[in-house]
Length: 123
Image (cartoon, rainbow, N blue to C red; front, side, top):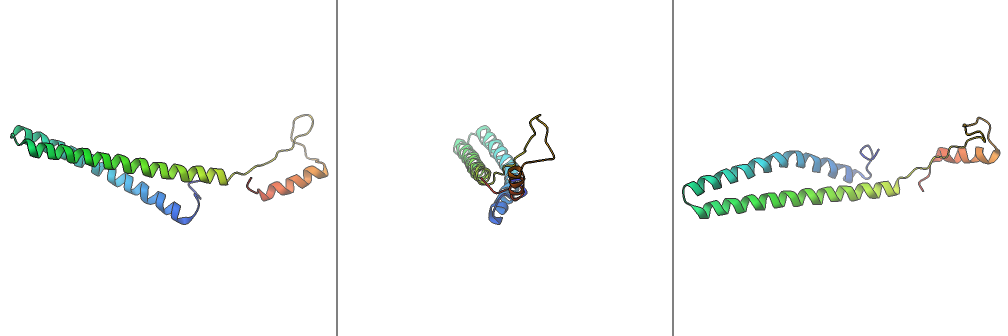
């Protein structure tokens, strides 16, 4: 139900945008990191260590930023979900007969409770 109605419209839009960004940025970061490391390998073979160190540093920076963005985004959406769960609880009462089965005849108190259950107010 949370994905169907996670709350305000901006939260839903943010979740969709982050999912699209994640699907777009993940392969882009992987390919970029691979290219940087391949370039660093080539520069080491050509004895240009400064360029190789620069490419390795670029790869580390790239993956650090990617991992930090992913963790911050994931944590943010987990907090939104936890808040949604805390504020959107529904309690339903099932009244059973003495023999343990759900009965069709209820006392007047039970009938009043059943009417209130239909409203399903958050607790």
